[in-house]
Length: 328
Length: 301
Image 1: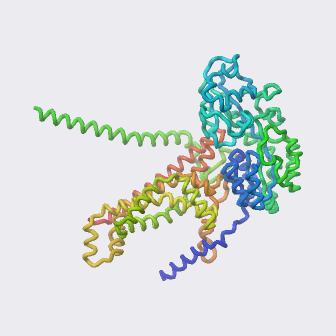
Image 2: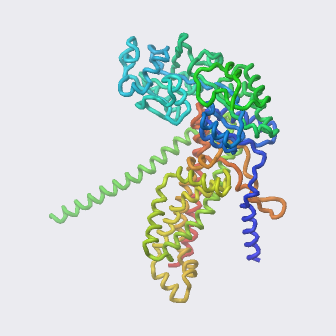
């Protein structure tokens, strides 16, 4: 009796491990950027209330997400930047076609201590002078940046080199992604940056707009002058495109093959139709309402490819972006 | 007179050392206590029924850790199931059977080195081996096996230490009455060393339960609002291994995600998740102490 029981158990075990039985069920698999995650989480939460389809969302970063996406392991990839050339090639090789859909804006905020009353508006040139690699060890006081500013020590706080925020800021300000001075307090945890600038009169840092909106009482946002006068970061200025160059669209990439599955199609349409309201709820900046119609149109037409041609671009207005014809 | 002075001097040294020892002990305990109080301060308010029975949500006050604590529990179960038999068998072999030669020494050195390999390396290895080669996918099974490999060196070394404390005379006595080597191990070595082995297993599992880096590499999720399939079914054969293939998330990943959110209310959730993780670790340790006590009672020498 004991022997049969053992044999039976072993049999079930072997059965469970047979590769043929590992087929996935109807799960919509999403992975990618942690910046886009809160929006996708909110959409998935609401979507699963409306129907029994199961949705899973992972955070392996924009790059890690595209790796899985181009191997065909996920249906949708969250991305805080456009797909790059080498990722396009990987997708092409695996025969994965994708539809690029902007879903919201992500805005970076440059913050200073509330006691700082001299640098409330800064030009891109000022910021470049502070953050470019040549500033390392040289630019140590505010006076060195602008002679009109006091001779107070300048303390810098920023995200670590692995973050998409770092890539975007350096590209928009210094002109080349990942090109930055290295002698600043770096942390992957934005809350530490908030604390640093809050406790340091000469402090300056940058991070996502949502962190500033949560900490408005202890921080001051710098109005950035991109050539047309200083513009403060806020929902309206980001939405209208005047807060440049520190705001950018963020995306979801939908695999064309997955989009043929009815539940994936329903999910993406649900995503676009509810984005306006849900993006607001998670404290990101939604696209202008009419642009979501263009996004929906692009999805329903199944226009594959990217509007960026494999490289990042700074300061493209969203309406122009959606008018471009995407290419694979 | 000189002798008295001498003795007094030595007694002073003794006191000084006991004080140093006490401080050293307190550093560890006080740090842990401070951490717990800090977490409890922030997190206790969130510890309610809903927190344990709800899935993640964009509303901090509605968000819960159901998928995370179930995931952690199930993954730990698979880890223990894989690591304990493998680790104990390897430990017994190395201690009782292996010939003392260069090969064995080499294996021993490598096991000791494995314990120092960063956990992310295990994640990368598992991604190639379990996820792609064996086609286990990004599943609970993959996670359990990966963490099992991670703690295997700890289990092996604890097993060997425990076996080494058993006096040689016990082995000789067993052989003297005609026991084979396996009978000697089965009836004497394993029962007597069970307490020590268990301690090692728990130390290993306590390390595994807090890991997040290797699990993210092999596809642990962050948002998942359903549970693994039930292991019991209504139809023949009544047992299902479907749950082994399920996607999952674990408590450290959920806590990390909440910590990195801007909203302060999510930070409180993270503290509450941290408290839960600590409670699970303590429960595991408690269970081990209890089982060890039971084993100790049965030993007659």
